[in-house]
Image (cartoon, rainbow, N blue to C red; front, side, top):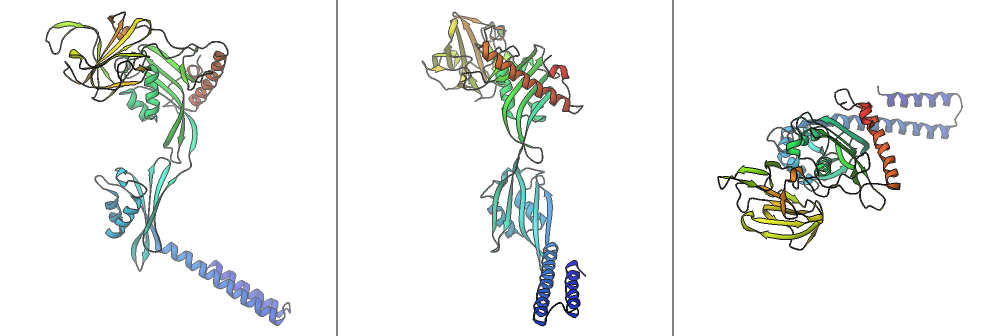
Length: 435
């Protein structure tokens, strides 16, 4: 006997005892008896409804197999081909199911009608922070929606030795392309990532992170701190919005800007394929002075202006192919050759880091690369040994505000370092505090 049946019987017994005790007159006793009967019937119906739902619903948790798509998974789970097609068409209105990958988890629900399972719902995590659900309606169709999940916030810290490569290591420990690009941009003025960074070197990133209930990064916010320790030494920068500036800039612990007058590497992710100096020319076949440096990179990789300046030439130029030359302050010029496409015009003003063209192999070239030259008063000099002044250095009240922000960031780093698990704790507490 169910709990509701026991309650109903108890109610009737109580009413009978009350009647014999003379507590009710005849009309009141009749009404009370009828109410008790109705309540007992309602409890029995409720019990039956919940029991039927439990017994007629089934959910299966599956993962997409290699070479399998969502429709094939639904039919493997037991859905009819027509139901699988209907559900897939509905899901396609809010999410492209082709984005699902091998191993993704899919929850499939069925209603058991007359002993035969009928597809009633599909649910899966579409991306960090959101999920897709498809439910069958009363008319037999499916309705789908993508639901944004609640997210949590933290200040994340990654402090690790470089393994096979800086990019792959940073991604492995939770950084996104956004943080890695910020690291590359900040150090582009004095670090050649292909030549200067090796396995065993150390990097640190501190940034805002929003994550879902499974710990997956949904998005990232502001960068607070970056550091890189290589054979060139250790460099660390703090993000700070100085009074009067419109966006934060990187500064070292003394308040000196990370920005330099000219960038050392004007194309991200490139490999130094030919240095400045005498070399055996790959096309002409004899030794000649190479008055620039070559960076090997895929065709179409963006080429950045090494510094602020005015475009003196833009377009085809002799054996250089598609070529751009920029005049900077203090007698400096930079030149960029063998582009697949030029993105500026003669006379244009450009800002440091602005895209001026794309890597190619036009002119006298044996493969896709950027030929990069730095000239001072008309003479080519070695870009990789160039010593140029940096940007703004903080003073006065701006420096005082920076020191307050630096202390706050160092406190965060120290706390995160103490919270780190033993295998990830690679920076000492004193280093994290900037001592």
